[in-house]
Length: 97
Image (cartoon, rainbow, N blue to C red; front, side):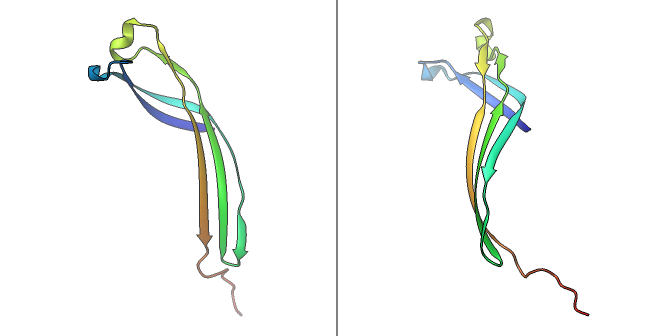
């Protein structure tokens, strides 16, 4: 499950001098799917790549001064790629008797 708090700003197409024509804030629910691997190359070190895709519901809204026009359909799709290197300080705590 995915969640995003989104903030959209619109501009009048083809007229940059007109500036912002409206803003729209919404909360979107969706899904998240991904895959990742982690490989330990020493007893205390590992590296990992990860890919995630987030898909959120579309919303229809009239925005700012465009309220008299057809509603605008807004959707959000996000893809991320992450890489990481991990180091485990110390080691397992073993009781000695």
